[in-house]
Every structure is written in structure tokens, then in C-alpha cells.
Length: 116
Length: 117
Image (cartoon, rainbow over all chains, first blue to last red; front, side):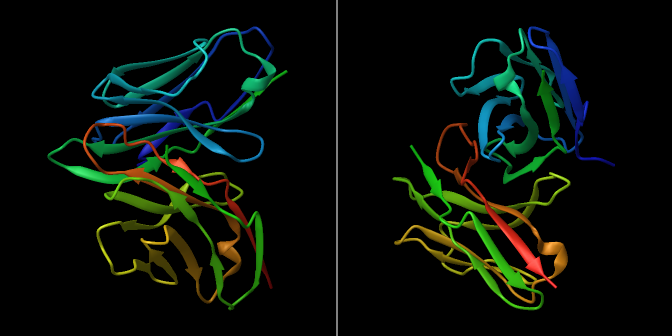
């Protein structure tokens, strides 16, 4: 039943490791996003994919690599994790085609990443 | 670039009372959407209400309503008959609606609302 799901919900890891967060939506949307929420609760866009094509890349270090195998999935891989990567990462989706524009973005439950 | 400002880091309200959360934004565009999202301690982002810029009528959703002043670029959220479950971080967000496909949300820094019994 979950519209936008993320796995894992919690991720604790050591500096220098590589980790992935997965996101799936069953809403039939064509656009997916990754947002980062820092320790001060500030939310900022990282990436956006529309129909598996990268649309937005907001000055994110290239250690972060999104991958969209299909419209329903957008995964986030992080290489060489750093302390500053500790945050909550949210996936979201919306329908952004010209024909059917649904402006509301629906968010997943978030993944809390802690880098030690 | 668009910016969203929430000038109240924290607010408190008594249960059953009314509270208004402020939000201002800066944009050169005329076609856009504005949103209020709620984030309770569970950290789930929940849509509270949305407003299309081209609509003059203020949006309402049950106990939640907005005061949208387009010329002043102001978008405040009013919560009536506050309930304990309304306690959360509230984020104001902006999304352009013109051509292209860059429909990211730009968020304010949030207002932490406490509801006192």
C-alpha cells in the first residue's frame, strides 16, 4: 500500500564505506527526487529524474550517484562516505508530464544515515 | 533563484486556539505553486495544503487555511482549533510551474509548532 518506500530506514556506517539507499514508488509517477535534510532540518534538493533521465543535479559531490533503472525506482549510491553526509535522505515522486501535471510531490519515510 | 523564508523558528499555541505560521518567498515568475508540509516526530513529510498562484481564492483544508498575498509574496498558514496532533515542524515550499522540467521544491527552514494542552 505504501506509495513511496525507501530502504533502509536507518543506516549506520563507517567513514570511507560505500552505501546505497533504494526508493520505489507505486503511484505511476514519471518524476522522482532525492532531498537531503541536514541536522538543522533544512531540506534541499539533490537530484531529479524524469522518465529515467537526470533533470536536476544540484551541486552535489560526485561521490553521490543516482541511478534510475526504471520510472518506479530511483536509487542513491554514495561512495567514500564522510561525516558530513550524516543526514536524513528523502525520496519523493510526482507526475510532471505536460499532459498530466500533478504538482504535489509525495515523500517517502526518509532514510537516516549516520556516518561514524 | 527562488528563496523561501520562514521567520518564526518556533511557535506555540494552546490546544483549541488558532495559530498562524508565516512564510514569504521571492520569485520573478508568475506561475507557481506553494505548499505547506508537516513533519511530525516520525519525520514523514505530509502535505497539509497547496495553493496555485493563479487562483485568488485562498485554499482551505478542514482546520487549515492559507492567506495568500501574491503581490506581497506572502503565504501564511492558519491552523484553527489546534490539536495535540498538530505539533510538528511545518515547512513552506515553492515550486515553479512554467516551461521545462525543473520542478524541484524549494523549502523554507521550517517552523517548529508546539501545542500545549
